Image (tube, rainbow, N blue to C red):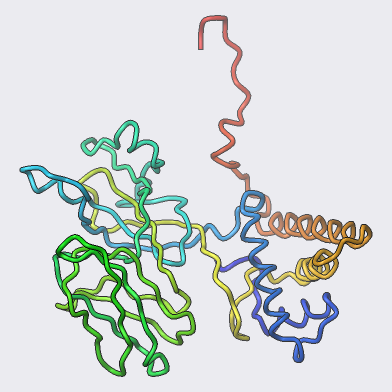
Length: 330
């Protein structure tokens, strides 16, 4: 599901413009700016509404190098896991062979371990962030390729650790219909910085063609999360359910996830009266409009849920009334 009664920018723009006292055709860049602010506001109200948590991906499990391992048994130098796609901000659930896995926090591995052997596979979020979807398999030169001719001449910067264990920054000028190859061999990729005015995707790969990442046009400083799977006998693919990451929209065919006109109007009035003012009446009016927007959101969500019984948030604990017991018993 892409949202609640989603509509396009072309449909939402005039509604937002009228609520703010603007003109859609004449003030389009400003209106689109506030459409994105409206969407971002809803995204940040996740604790209240729990929206955009149903993005699904089927991902192949990969082997990644385990840092700072020095043992005689090389089998412990890697771990099995997945890199989260760039449209997922956090993970709600993971399934293997159709069975849900236990999701663990970083604390569990740090303080108690994750139990690499056992009948039940567990998944936990890695503490480290990664700039590529896959790691280098060996010390090698790396190369960059652009998929659009409009991006030729733009520069990509990659911070790496060379085979001499020194960190340095490499620059790659994108060329037409070809790869730009580094002059030095690379041991580890630390960071990637991409030009922000790109039109198409950029590919990063080893010199032998093994692809490390395909960066979308809106990515400028890639930063991916990874999940580690504790049981080495887990399946080769897992299904993950994640919370959608906020990404800006601009074109007429882009989607505004919550397209209810009353909610968009309330958000527009909130921005109109609540920004750049110290007037008490305007601040009070903005607070009223924000409250109305939240109330309308609750009503819209209730209509979509219908009469289904909701189990509530897993963070609120057991909501059932506890049984009375004698002192000393439980």
